[in-house]
Amino acid sequence: MCDVTVKIIPADKGTPVGQLATAELHFEDGPLAGLKLIGFGVWERRGGSGRNVTFPARQYTVNGERRSFAVLRPITDVGAQESVRGLVLAAYAEFEQGACEFTRLDDSEWQCGTHDVVMVQTQEPVSCSKGRAR
Image (cartoon, rainbow, N blue to C red; front, side, top):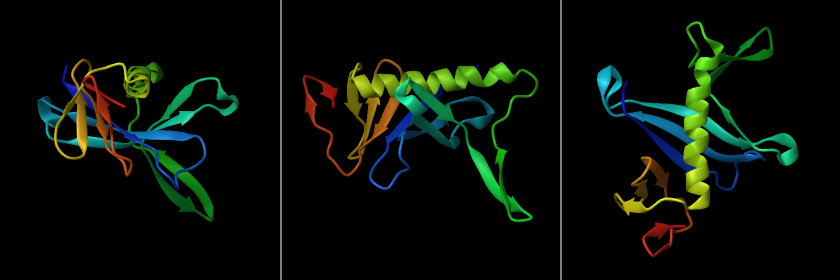
């Protein structure tokens, strides 16, 4: 088991309709320590009935047809991605609700003390009151 930090980057102007944020997985130990996996997307489901997470993919074209290649794929169990999807959704929900205490890491990042959720400050400043980032 390795420690993973989920980094939530809120969507800003110019992102596709329905995209709420992007997310990264930062690996803290093990053979992937010091590396990050980027390209996760947090989206509002069509019809507004919840959230969805898209996984990193590489797009390419074959005979004029656009296709994508999944970067993170299960070895055998298709359900293996659900734990990662749940981790990203839980991190976004906590970020969205302001349900955790944030600690300032530097001028642009805040870390949640309960679940290692990191939020990157966007163009709008993050205001703090009573120890919470909003």
